[in-house]
Length: 114
Length: 108
Image 1 (cartoon, rainbow over the protein chains, first blue to last red):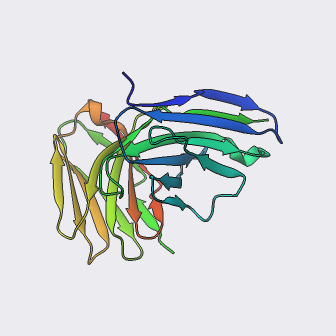
Image 2: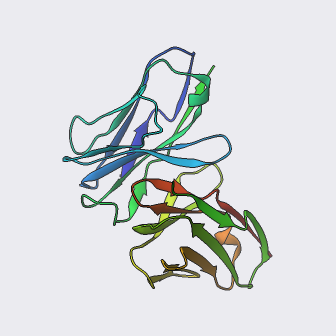
């Protein structure tokens, strides 16, 4: 069974569209994350979220919004997609409510905005 | 603003040799992370270092943290081909910042 899964794996879309990426973890973890890796392989954390706190990287445009229907899911919704949003987006989870624990990553979603 | 610098960015080494990857960060950090990424693959968490003097080892990899020097190292012992990957460090205070990554190639 996949511990952290993401759908879709690939997403090709037009500028201006709205899209969502889904993430599910079956590890019983308390905290989930979204990361972005650009074409130069630079990594950036976008959000971390547990049932008590959403921490947003202030550099993330407000077109990006995390939505958590329950503890096992943290979806990423993106409004008005731009060319610069093209990247690989990784979801991750960890035990506990802090970032002291090992993170487990999903396989990534490769987003291409045309 | 927290900045993280890794060096070297590219490392080619022979099997059986030892080497160290360095990770410097610019401001006080609560913790330091090391990750591995194979080409076209996801990230794998290697180590989480939580305090000054922390040392963690897994197989041929050993990570350490010196918070006074704002430096973490990832030491590779007797490298094997399977260690070829890109290694990222990341530091955390109010923000989390990643280094640019060290692309390691281990040659026979």
